[in-house]
Image (cartoon, rainbow, N blue to C red; front, side, top):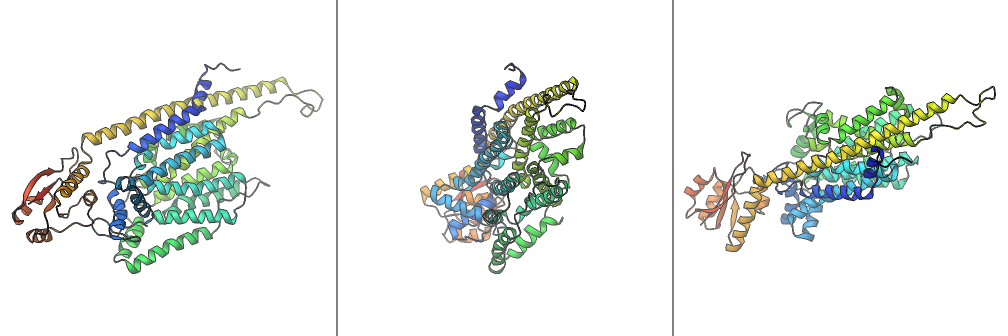
Length: 536
């Protein structure tokens, strides 16, 4: 029996304790909840996404929406429809806008843990859960008003279904293909054909590589569910696109040409270099990215740096995880228009791949290495094998056990470091947000609505750059300055919200207008516009 005070046992206690799972889940979900506090819609195109569901409720635009500045909304409406339904249940826009991403993040974390634990054991489950919840991307996207987290969940469900088919060595049945079709359709109605970039390259790589590396007589495992789920889901998406082209003015130019085709050019969207995602992933996924590289190097060292041998001996299920992650990264890197959050769907398969790496080191040390002499392994002279064989076997077993101990120790160190780094960074960011009034416009909007309700004011917002201002004040459109002056002077308006730059000119044109004490506070460290309320 090993001494429980050894590093191996101490780290094993941490990684194989159910209390660690509960602690990780609690910390991760807390960071998911607070990661974007104070809540506001001023960055990352959150206002555009939030406005889709707002317009559905206010104007009944269920299939095709606009942006706050009356351009065509470029994303399919599924997440907007979900947010509209949640608003009907909760009557809170903050809940309706942020709950879909939060629930998707929680579902991804739990699914990753259950998948890794059932396949590779509790230690792997802990690593997968920690890697997903404790990085710099997941807490940021968990309550961001965007489609990245729900899309990542749907893509992961498809990828895990493929992984399960490969692992179980079973054929694709009609029921499985229907699942893939349904999930692909959901992904299409969340963000369009970008789902192809995260799955098809990995499937092609796996089919090509495993077809070449598969030993003779091994089962023909396939990651390809057939053509019809892909074609049928694309057909559903094209129905929405064709409807937009025919019934929505400007849809073809804004959605088809600018949003989709323009992503592959370098004139409309700001292009980024080919290597853009790799350093960002190494940073945003740290320290887990460092652990992945370290474990891979340890594995190669144990194989005496025979890279070809490592690829030949890799299991099909791990090969699929590798192809899935790399395929999405390569294709997204080839698209000139880049932003870090767009590559987030490769984070969950990387978490599962890391769990499989840790599990593979456990299997190396737990595998049967030494063989006792039997009648089957005597030499040709009838003598038992040389004693040096047993010594060599024990040496290999000892080396493997030391390697496993080292991997477990560093995994535990990385887990603790991830809690400190991710937790500290998230909390510091929240404190900084409140200290520097990052939600200044949101607070201003609430105060204006409260005053307007108390005095029964009819008010409008003079056209401004800040798209979130419409949502803070719960209006569906800005009003142009000249029209605002006309409506005010006719007596149709009691208050106007305007930027400080436009206020002097407005005050001189509107009869009886005065500046109220209600102003948006200056957002420190940000060169952004401030707003004031003009009343009679």
